[in-house]
Image (cartoon, rainbow, N blue to C red):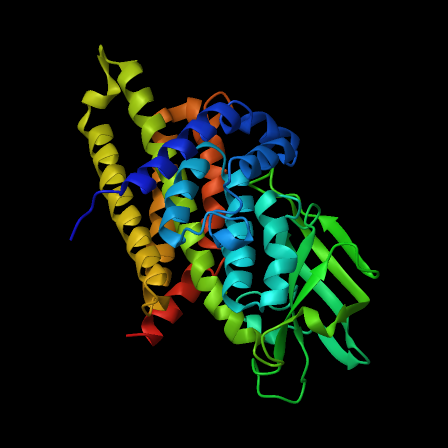
Length: 378
């Protein structure tokens, strides 16, 4: 068992860190305050090859797997979680899904454009009444000559206002057993009847785009059906395993940023004649943050490695996402506490980390959903 990164994994880590320091970190606070989508950063990420990291080489990508993606996403999220989640969704929920479940024509049509950044992807599963209970979606896809007509509303869609390609889950057989009548469709943003609804005002990851997406008699040609009719829910569950690795990696990145900021501040801040890192109360917080960071990273990397090997990984993905997100939130709370009153202001980045961390326990399956998945796999 070797815990060292390979040469190409180190290269991904180093290039991700350089990109984060140069492109993301200088603008993260401003973009958060303005709730401005980081389009220039995303375009530069595409030029660096990050958007196509998990896309096979024959379609213009790097042909790498979930572990390389997790390593990259940690670096990006340590600087800007809004950019991190945008790229995570694009890679793990759109590109990887299409590379695994799409047919050759669909791959040739869309993967090169997703790799180059010509198209950004958005994942449309959740609905206002169907969050944790994803099988309860109501968006319908009625069969017509040559394809399907989609009608319904999707909620909390990452990159909704900037996506060029939507992966949409809709009910094609309302009489089927719950979860068995759902199908997966590829829908371009230019489709008639597709409109982007309200933009959500969020606590954190404020520079990412989160919107409603509305479908009113949107015609989708039959060739844009992914997999078989009625097989969409199984595709969704498999895809969400990969998405949970992405959010686990995001949690690791935010967690690491909290620790680094706290170590720096505690070595500079003086009270009672000494720097506060000399106080046991502070030192123990730092020790716990560091230990849980290593545990989170190892869980995420194990889950990613299992998925890359084609091994059963559902339980490992949920464990990684569960633990890493909870540890990230503990680290964010401790980081603010270590900074004291300063941590409650926007002068220091831990205030933003604290807000960004909260979502990691909610999306890609809330904390208790992960516990359900894990317990069912025991």
